[in-house]
Length: 243
Image 1 (cartoon, helix red, strand yellow):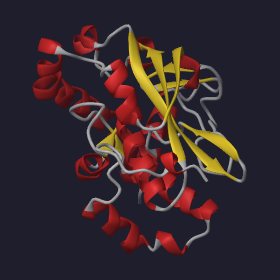
Image 2 (spheres, helix red, strand yellow):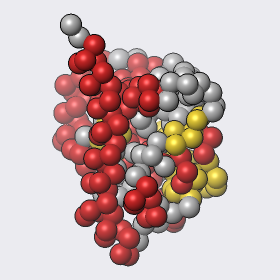
Image 3 (cartoon, helix red, strand yellow):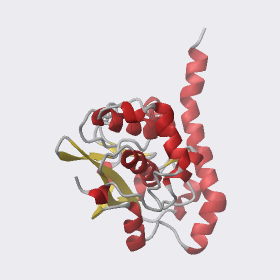
């Protein structure tokens, strides 16, 4: 066991009372490692909704309070939950092409997005190997809404936070193997880091200056409103289908 993959950091703050309370309420410590990973993963995937926080480098406890996140921020929380459960994990940094965010980010604010956006996934150590976890980014309801909206698309799909070769049935649920939902949009591979803190200290975050100010105070709220409207498509169809 390598203890550096179990350390708490400013971002991976698994000792925070809110994170510890969640672990205790769910009785996750009673599970074996496979199910510990699965419980933390599925919680972050579906109970933390897809959305845009104020910055990539916010703490895991702040993501939990927000109740929503994207690849980097959901990853912060997943790493904290895993390490809080004694599961080794690490950070893998990338950039992705901005085109996979088109649709999730409305056209009228798309100019704000860098051409190549900082992206990451979490690697978890299980059964003697490292497993890539990226499929937790989109919650089930949001993804289902997209699949219904673009029902004719079965294979390659890029947009709305998705970049996959298997849009109809992507590998997104924990089964002890790699999960992906944005892998096909990767442009740069920055490699492995012990923690997101070290990555952001070296690479910075996606926005700075005036763009960061505008994003945090105005634009992310517009993006989240758009994402919520996409998600509501499923809710309305379910309601309309009920007798």
